[in-house]
Length: 127
Length: 152
Image (cartoon, rainbow over all chains, first blue to last red; front, side, top):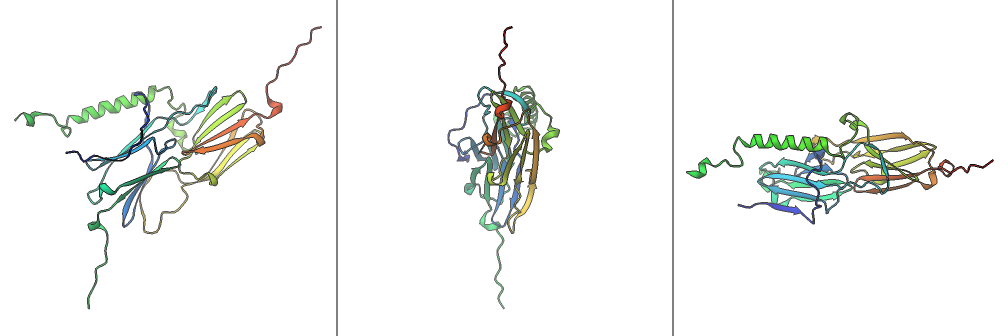
């Protein structure tokens, strides 16, 4: 059984084994049609981010390469670069085949549509 | 029968593997040369910054994912650098319920004192993938200069 589905995977960046791993901060929103997961991954672009669904677990992963300017000395460091990774268990009511992901300004947004049968619908009342 | 004895991925023993890998991750993070020098406590300061010094001044990177560059104002006054703007300030769309909110939101302002007076006309800023990079060259009169020693 291999129900793994890669939504986006263009040339993931190779990074060394001892890199730091960060848990990205996320917002999760829900409306009638879908769930939206928004994850902060500063420094990643569409080539260095991946969203994978396997066994109803959604994995968001990204790589941000350290960009120390040439010939500079570090004076202070408040954030690091490395790998981002966070897993989410999807509810049964969503359709994993129609998940869409986009990245902009270092933010990954994943839209997870609900299945047709769980969407709210109006029931016609006859007089 | 053998299959029943195999320890599968869902066996209770995997908890120890997970703990071990968590421990390894922690060790990696703590021993990494790139580990942040400041503690988590300062995460409340927005945006977090990395500061480098170069031959002609400073380079500052600020981590501000999701910020529209149009919403950020950078001002330099003498030796003070101020970043002002808003992040994720939009309200959720109609009919949307917020289930979880971890990302910073609202207005921010951060002021840094530079170790020199910057040349405001030569300050450059670029924004890419949620990272803002500001290069601040020293003002001309603040540049280090060699002093010739007169022989008597």
